[in-house]
Length: 294
Ligand code: SF4
Image (cartoon, rainbow, N blue to C red; front, top):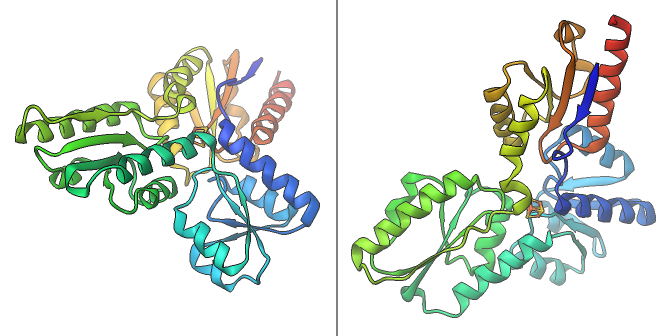
């Protein structure tokens, strides 16, 4: 049986960096508070908890003793979080992804350098997503977030628009919404400037076509992800759309040997939140089962 782990899956560089910073800190200090989920994966969460990580929400920050060490995850935070930490004497370990940091800076610049009624800064993304909350904070809460078509009613015709995307936005969805925003703005005055900045992370934008190619080239696909990961659900749908023998699993214990009957190749892939060690565990389990069966 040929068993391959998808070379394009697993953590993006921003998450790899955040996990490495957390691990290093935990090794030296034993405890670290993480503001929100570091990764949407229960198995990885548990592993880090065992190393001393504690997860907190923003409202819990005030309850921490002075001098506590808090990790800012790859999605970043609004400036108010940094101000609060400074006031309370917390030490922040800032693992904001450099790509997100650049986007925060661009959004801030676009919002700062213009009069409010002369420009509309628009972010296409999920309103409740931590990265988008961080970005709107950097825009001084003046940015309009467009998540879907129902938000387009807030776009103002005839006012210059600067559009950005959440780094993990679906490229097709971004293109569609940006075109509709442009149409609304130009309906007020066809000479109005509309600047469309597709700030989707390159590590995300090519993920779906690469996964589809990988899924097509194997008899069976095991897609490993936390069921709560929206990225995982979206990528699973992409894999199953080209290979009906795609199984969604959370861990190696769910694998059934009956799946491999008549199969010559198994591909193992996962979400951007699926840790490499979990993919390797799945591969080892498949090898074990297929060797016994064979
Ligand atoms: S911007 Fe890209 S590399 Fe950074 S955290 Fe987001 S997906 Fe990962």
